[in-house]
Image (tube, rainbow, N blue to C red; front, side, top):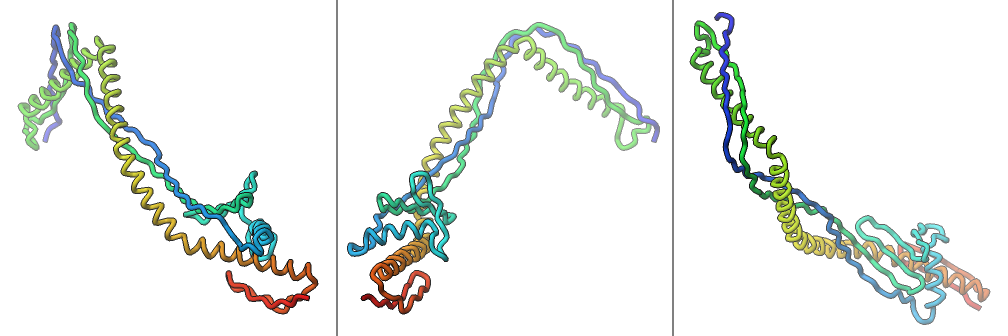
Length: 263
């Protein structure tokens, strides 16, 4: 094997021609789709103890009694407890309890569109390309192969140079076509996004329904424990105010067993 030798191909071309090109652009759009479900009920703690028990429930939710974590409370006085997948709120002013679940999902769409650019170009381009071979044709690298490779490379460069000349002389035409294609692509992508948005909303609503159903037992336990403590504290207050005695007071979860003596 000898040192490689090189061949060079030079191509020149004078251009006076009309041309037409299709310009393509792709657009991507995305947005967030959010759905929220809420179940609201009025809390009633019984006519005979209603007001006192409801006031005591507010104190329970505020965390005034041992063993009961305080709920968050906003400026309007509404209590809020985040359980992860659902949020429980209680408004002492209206005695309304709400269970809320919210899901958000990102929806995206992509579309491609085209526009045409055309013009008449006058100019000249020149390119060159190089190939290599061996005198002993080692590895099949003959002079003929080298010339063919160099010519193909030169022709590719020439085509690219011609296209670049078109674009240089008619940059505004290409820019207009690109903007038109991009506008079309974005409109198509947004239309597709709207089509997908509806299906995603339906899927989110179904997931929310399942989420609320799955959380029902946990929410019930949470509320029963708070309401049970409200009853307990109300009874204790009643006994204390009337000079009675508490003979036994046992709480297990949301179940309260008390033995009271009133005079």
